[in-house]
Image 1 (cartoon, rainbow, N blue to C red):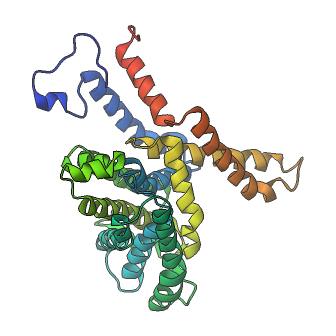
Image 2: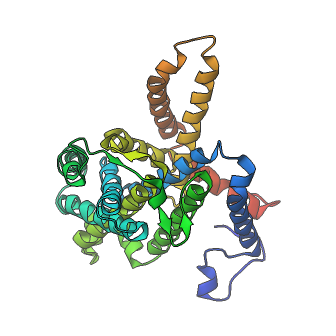
Image 3: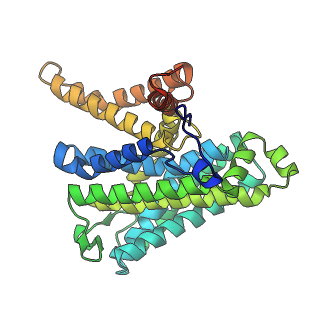
Length: 355
């Protein structure tokens, strides 16, 4: 981050602090106040959309770690989100485990499942790694969940598990309704963001970037590629498991249809639009896609009196806009929305001497 003239630091700790000036502290405090007061400003109608943005950003955070920071391409991240969700659901509604414990179990189960499918990453890359992660997607959804977890949960072979909203409790706090779910979204997303941001500032984060830029050179310099690749899959899986365990609080029932290949592609598109290798890219990308699709839904609903079949084409138009958005960003803004945010921050920090 560029700093205004006259601002400097006298020690290493101050130079590497997250928020290095009083203006940044003020800005972050104001942002926190906005998020805390948001449910009382926008009302309940828009809160589910904000919650959906938080879920998409949390799920895309693992994809950002794998693709943006470690260079490991994945097209099956929805599978680890599903493992987190189903582990949490089965342990809660079948075995009677409290939600906080089930949530943590779902996180670690998703992390371990991701590591299992990340083992080939030590030997393969590029197209072969894409095929491996796609195999994880189909095997997890159609075999593990559809054929194994469904019968174990006692809900049949379809993998459907009905959800009792009253069981989502953390101490005296019941996570039921749009406002409690929104605050739970905020807590989980902020904690995950802080954890990943701190991890990327350590030796582990530097090793991941070295592998992403040139794995052969990184190995020649002493980086244990196998270890750090598996660690990235584990952390990414844990983040996906957290997204799955959180998403249960918004559902009446969980099915494999919630975690299809479309979701995996959607998460990759979110980081491409938001910006690869950016701590805010997955948030910007998730917000962009969710808001654009919601705007499209509103427009088509308004067009029904004029065009009765408008909403029937919503699914096709949604995919069309998704593809065009990715192509447009890759051509005209390959660094994503986070790059524009970085430019805006520098302009504000250096104003009025923006040059």
